[in-house]
Image: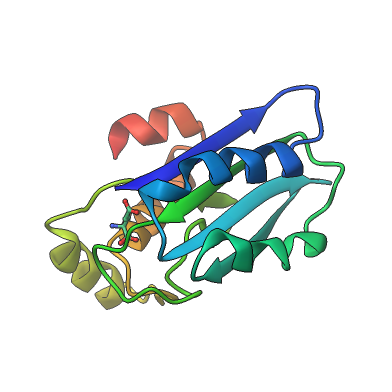
Length: 148
Ligand code: GLU
């Protein structure tokens, strides 16, 4: 279980996302994080522990962003650390996940054998690296998702 909130639209969304996470905090107390897009880059703030821990990191996120997402984590794979907090980012992809991936260990072993370096102990991160791999061949993100 976890809480997920996303926004894309005309308004600056950092505060909107944080307010959304407050409403969803009961769905995950292990860590929280927000990723925003601004000036063509992904910006991330995340923190282990309750949502109020994240609040002190929000000033490092750009206020101008109008696209973003947030997560409160209920850990299934990997301890409740900042490294394991979502969103996970690699290249031009930021990812948040709810639930668990039963065969993640098999997928991770294949990716590691291909030279992929993992930054977290979560099951979620395998999807991030698979997406990165597929979008090299299939740059259209929607089509890449179908291939996944
Ligand atoms: N399985 C993921 C993790 O442990 C997601 C957990 C959740 O749904 O919050 O990070």
